[in-house]
Length: 227
Ligand SMILES: Nc1ncnc2c1ncn2[C@@H]1O[C@H](COP(=O)(O)OP(=O)(O)O)[C@@H](O)[C@H]1O
Ligand SMILES: [Mg+2]
Image (cartoon, rainbow, N blue to C red; front, side, top):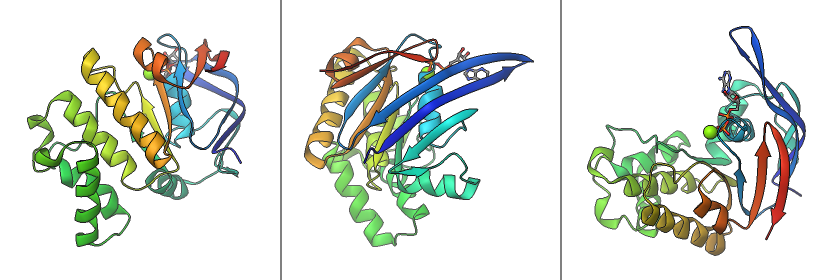
């Protein structure tokens, strides 16, 4: 069964009374273990698509299933449960909580899941070691480089063992080498732990390294290539 199955998905925004057709009929399946990217120019609908897949936004029409379950009609409580337990998010701007240090940022997800203190610390520190931040665990985001902050974001996204990690332009604020190292890390997590990743990107390096490329143009899939 596909992790994600999208059928005839459409999204129209109302921009001051003008209809903006951001997605115009998307059909897409993502299978377990994929390392895939949605590519396309700015404004092509990448963020809209990832946000709908992750339950952050609702489609105008069409269906979206996660592991066989249609999530369109989920109420806010079920949607937040879904985001907490089944989906990991990585954003372009890292989106860490500034007053919490690295390990607290990662532990926060586990706290929301009701996991006890010692188990939280154990799991968060293990994951931070895996992403190469053993020495930076007690630093707040402002004391970390962009690449380190994005590694904390990766750790936070995977600590709850989600079914899929959605990463919206994860390398957009990183220099080439740092972005490349981040891609290495995510690829290793994909291969070693079987974590499914779905990126959005217009970074050629991410496109080169992903194993499947879905091109969006004006809200439709123009091309879908598995390498
Ligand atoms: N909240 C919103 N209100 C109105 N229009 C929006 C909103 N979010 C995105 N759009 C429009 O939808 C289209 C797709 O945007 P987006 O999904 O952000 O594309 P991408 O991530 O590929 O740059 C664009 O035309 C954008 O201006
Ligand atoms: Mg975007």
